[in-house]
Length: 289
Image 1 (cartoon, rainbow, N blue to C red):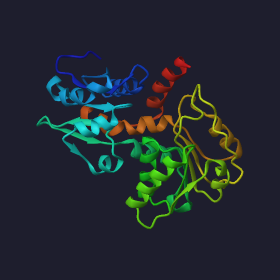
Image 2: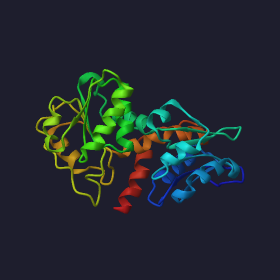
Image 3: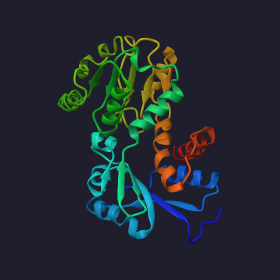
Image 4: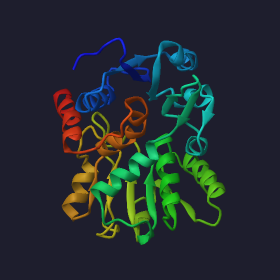
């Protein structure tokens, strides 16, 4: 469809940003719903991020998604942060309100949980401890979301143990009485014993990165294995898990589901994450590989 002067405008801000799949997805949703709108990449240098975000209302934008390295800057730039963003310490979705104020939220955790429910529908939070690899922003979002969902305990594993200890300290403060344990990297395989869910939140297994060296023998067969990496779509970890019969959860679905709240704001309609939406993004990924 054609874009007119009355188009609803949003975008994704990052540095660099050319790799982002968000314009493909949001463009698909605009087209699907027949909405006069545009979603554009916004390459913004780190030193300009706060200024750029605060300029959105003056440029007529209805909002933007925010990716690396600007999530902390977005947290500082918005006028209002919801409870989720406050707990996460970052903002990945900025929504311009009718009065020009900026409201910020973080949708990564909700996107992960929606993807988990879609690809591993039999998983239940109470079935056992969650084991997380990684301590970055995505790992923090996933950890908080899973503890909110009711996992009985959590085990954190990271190559730099001090970072795992810092995240564990934060989580214990947020969830008093909920056990959060740090497992040493060299004991990572043993740390899977009795787990109800395994989530890989590091760059290991990504195209150009080494695979995660992890024996899955101790992981109960009913435990889903999720990997936030989506290039490749099936990482070495997911392949080994699939071969053992575990439910597997790839990272592409999280990317799709976390985009829903933002589009609902600037598109004016809540989009559906379905096979067609997944395929349009997957087609671009396959062309790049």
